[in-house]
Image (cartoon, rainbow, N blue to C red; front, top):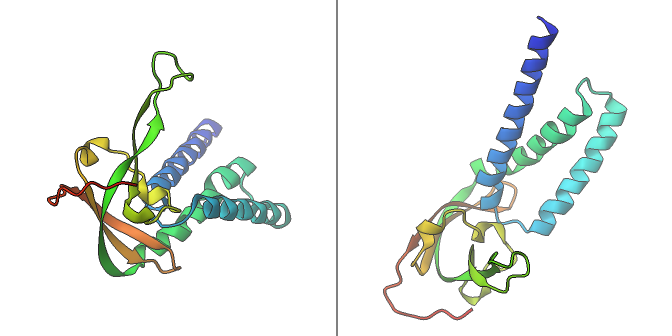
Length: 178
């Protein structure tokens, strides 16, 4: 195998590993009821553990591959196992209001304009500490809707996961005040 072909395969594995980690993060971890603080602390401990193990085990991979692909993959796989082996499905329906966020106006970062966010606030502050399951990437699905129905299961490691969600109209004309 030529050195150029070997370098190409190595780069291909790195790109695939990065894409896989991004997919697992945005498809699995963002649907897990875990606080951002817990995520950061656990990832920092994983990096410290990884640094010690890399130093003492003398692995035959580069530091970049180990720290940018393998450790995040280990982190993501923990949540993947929690997600895949979840049980006890239940549905929960809540009224919600849009979060409010600063939007960039004509004055750039000094803008005082406010706009709707794709992060929602559930009635009675439900799941207030869990930011990720209340954040959505498709504004059009939630536009002009007032209710969200979560399909939630208990994960294998104790972290609840959202298996599916659906936005719908509120037929009661109840005004939700957060």
